[in-house]
Image 1 (cartoon, chains in turn yellow, cyan):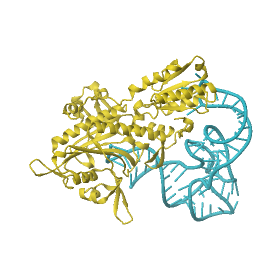
Image 2 (cartoon, protein in one colour):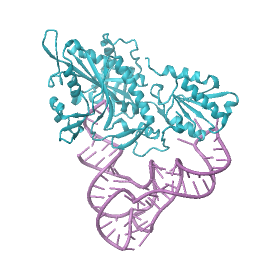
Image 3 (cartoon, protein in one colour):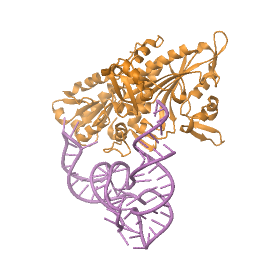
Length: 449
RNA sequence: CGGAGUAUAGCGCAGCCUGGUAGCGCACCUGCUUCGGGAGCAGGGGGUCGCGUGUUCGAAUCACGCUACUCCGACCA
């Protein structure tokens, strides 16, 4: 992409409504625009990152055996009356009336609808286990939206729903999601630490939240320090195998949010030098809730003995529109965002130090073509701007590598590569620059973990 | 929903106390010179001062009401 033809409205100053660093940087980097309280447009750069985050989530969900579909945002109140939640959900639910005065709602979650789909088509225990998910916009009329897209009223959520014959099956499904979540966050350069959680209004008795540690996190968390760099399950993980050992291994180390903190246990189970109290951003939440919905909504299958069995369900959420700021909170410096390659909007910033100079333009145009041919996603800063402005933009929007080309280096046939995260620079022959970048970028794409 | 604040050009702000019809920096437009870390000079465009009512000869400025947004608390991916 040539920057001169892109839509990238960067700001030098942060709009005053932004309080935390990720919100400020998302506004300054031209990723989002606020439209109302808790409501944001995703501008091209932000949307590109969001799509990469979504893609990683999809890959890991698919790998774990979940199947993607898409349900509508606007739902009928009828289904919610069946489960009893139409009245129970409260003011967070945005209620709408259509022209026929039918009661509708903008979905805050989809347990009822997925249960309806399930009960329509699935009749036999032989069709289990089943895990269906979608990634769709949700609306929760939060009392106080804040922190940009970290807590917005309209937000994107991946919600998966598992269906099993019994508690054992459902627990296995829960473990699969648990492992998929560890891998998902890891691929985005995050450490998502599972913590025992309260099940809240959705109900249930097996519930874990995944938290990313960050100073600006909304929850106080208490954990065993070894969880921070614990190696995650590899690509060889067989999701049909028994994943209980992985789950037990991870949950054997103490971790809890403040509302679940048991100080005595924390002190007893974690050696003093390993006790870490920090703040966390909740980026995922997984539940097992048994037959809470299948019973009232009559979602049953015929078992081997011919009897009707209410299915055991779980639901599994990840917030992509929250993950984007979470990644920024975890990875930035004074100059701006530092994207991990796996979610970076562009992998390389090609910086033409002297746009308008025929030789420099020719060299950059040629390199831009080579970068594309090498499969690298590059943003080519071809604007007629001082070098400083170009470096500042590339730093701000967090592109992992900068390929810097100017007349001075060209005299010796050289270019420079700057690594955004470390600030390290290397000078190398023009002819080898693209191959070098490819060698740097490809291993970090993390499409294989 | 309780408490606190803010609202003046696209963004950041001054002006308000002590009413006299709006200004600064950045951004934007034109021209020239520049270009190795957010360029310089010259010229230029852009504002129903959040909305409404009132006070006054006169309101960005004073009073009252409303709205939007932000922050602090209780809830959530």
